Amino acid sequence: MSLPRIAVDAMGGDEGVRVMIEGAALARRRHDRFKFLLVGDEPRIKAALENHPNLRASSEILHTEGVISGEEKPSQALRRAKGTSMGRAIEAVKAGDAGAAVSAGNTGALMAISKLALRTMPGIDRPALAALLPTLEDHDLVMLDLGANAECDARNLVQFAIMGAAYARVATGREQPRVRLLNIGTEETKGTEDLRDAAAMLKASAADLSISFDGFTEADKLGSGDMDVVVTDGFSGNVALKAVEGTARFVADLLRRGFTSSLRSKIGFLISKPATELLKHHLDPNNHNGAVFLGLNGIVVKSHGGANAAGVANAVAVTARLLEENVTERISADLARLGGASLRKPRVQEESA
Image (cartoon, rainbow, N blue to C red):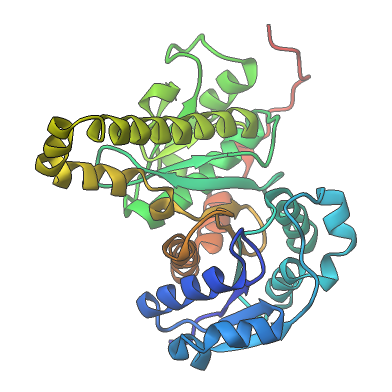
């Protein structure tokens, strides 16, 4: 079976070409049916490929000298996108030369370029940034939006739920994902009017969408494992994600200090090493790397800028799985089945109390 190739922005990320190529090579071993379009400075890419003959044999290089820096504003990046590795990787998806693109570059620029080039899917007003978060159970949690849209109305939140559920079916294998809205409490009267309206729409449409919707959840339950999708606006989602990441680093640092504070604690570390290694693996962001811009006419995956080769490999693997499982087509099918009727609830937007 021939699968669409994956365009890799080889110049993005803190470490640049070496880590992006090494990560793509690691992912190629797990998804050996895919071919790659490596976009960036050709001499540097060729040099990096010398250590990865398997990837070299399944890749084509698209040379471009321009690179979008991490400090560039999205508006600046848009103006010169065509001459950059990020812009040309996205353009390859638009032209059909690749089925998806992966970049570890500037998130705002990637969002702006992707949205302008690929446009949003019919029935979707705004794309959303979705990522997988670890939980106490044996599955990850799909959370969106994580920063693409600071303000969202009820219609946006319902669309995010549809997209998140489609992604969760791929990520968890659960045909009827458990969807919740992030709120400041679980009572039906809590939260903004948009949140309450979105909850009412999802409750009325749950059967049509093949989801299990049970209202609201709070941020302290994100890792519980009793839900598959959490939906929120980009402002709240980004704050919650950074809090989770910061807490993980805090716990890891506390353990490191505690286990090195005395000889007795070092002995304790050796005894508990299997448990601490499991904790380290679970909290390592590289093992959950790869955020997806859902709702576009094409798949775009954002790798963390500081990801190592294993993290980049995970982002590429996420991309490959989304292509294999036709997640874009699944979202379209869900929207068509719903018909959009329950999403049309026009009302005058009011300032929440």
